Length: 285
Image (tube, rainbow, N blue to C red):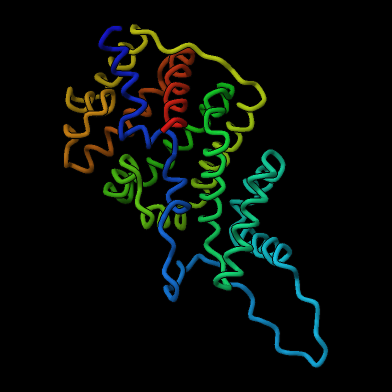
């Protein structure tokens, strides 16, 4: 195996592959439980107050019905996520019902719900857990949508906060993701929906793709060099050598964008092989 082939195989398990597959989407769902008494973020929809006691007992919604009402309320307050939950219910009813159960459990335990961004994040986590490998088997349009959504989100974050942009390269913190989700909800919704649609399409078409050849890896490396990446940056992004990453946050953020842009500019058959390899490896991590 040539050195270029070794680099592309390492690429998929390097720290910076997190950027390419949107691991930021699962940050909220895997964060530690918020301490009781700690107020939720401002974007959390609070449950309605308990009704005043009535002379005659009145039938209250069951736990399941209350959870569904709460989810409808969350989506009503954040309509950008409406299409995501509709498609989740259509394509993956098991994951949709798991989301309802998570809301029901939270209402029973704490009398409140998390933010709608949290439940989108948790649904993506469940999709990755149960169907992670199928994303790489989706059609070209669906896979490209995943990476295009990631690039659009990164560009938006880069304009406002290079530190957060670099955080997404390494794997964003919970606070970073919450901040982005609250202020860039259409972009986050597109990231989530793109992932969901690619997963559903991969389940249906089960496309098979060969690994990139050494010449194709060289072509990618050449494209990165032409976009100004240094040898150290190539080692970071193609070799996973994080120790060589620069501490200049603006520079690293720009290099991350160049990485995705260079991939996007490759001939379609080449970039699809690399996209699929990245998604396959991430599913195994």
